[in-house]
Amino acid sequence: MVLGGLRRGVAILGVAGMAACSAPAVTAAPPKTNGPPEPALISTDPVLALVTPTGVVTEVLGGEPGAWQVRTPCGATAVVPNGQRITEATVVLDPGHGGPVETGAVGANQLLESALNLAVAESAKRALEGEGISVVLTRTAEYPVTIAVRAALVNALKPKAAVSVHHNGGPSEASSKPGTEAYHQHASPESRRLAGLIYEETVAYFSRHQGVRWRATATPGVKPQLSYQGQDYFGILRRTAGVPTVLSEGLFLSSSSSEARLLARPDVQRGEGEAIARALTRYLRTDAPGSGFIDSRPRGPEGGPRNLSCVDPPLW
Image (cartoon, rainbow, N blue to C red):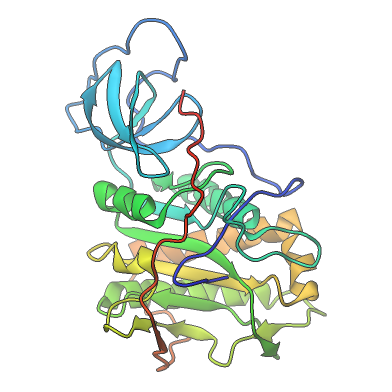
């Protein structure tokens, strides 16, 4: 659910796939919590990000083995002695929300959007890696990450595509089909194409399920959303200009108990993630145009930071 261009997120017990994921392009031995500094890199590629010993993905700002300077999830700087080093990523997946304050939408079954987003993103990551595509998650467990930090990681890694995974809430109406939405950067034809593919694959997957009372906004589909200033409304899209980025709203969570029950199923979380992975694979390997495009361009005040109580998780 989008609130002021951002969403709020937290964790929920019992949702599959909450464990932290490893990152691609790792060029060092598994992280250690103590002992001597890491051995020197064999690769000469610059280290762009680091998976800390506690599994947190951080942007590397400088330093060297034994004393990496990183950007924390809340936007501070810290020195981390070691970790798994990331030198590249083809795709960045951004599980929206996270932590005890930024919950996002909440289902009638108490399913929290932040946990759902992470489970879906982890499933997409596994499926993409099965295709030989390197993936980095902006969030690997239930902790807050500011939009600025998420976007900075995308900009540092410069992937070929990025997807922010979300699920909807708020006002909706009965619909004969899934009310999936995919928002793209208004000035990027490639972002638009990626959004069309994500919409196409996720709606095709959700539509297999019978007996679901679907909900939708007045304008479901693939679209940009602009601020009054004419910029992309959502911060993750506005701040990652230059990288084709999409914000996916899978299904309604807080305003549809029927969809909330469906989304609580681990097989459905996996299926949605695999649908996103198929869309990304098609985007990277074909010229498929996607579908579901609509002309709606709603406007609102530019989305801004809402991480008012951001507390960094332990990094090592």
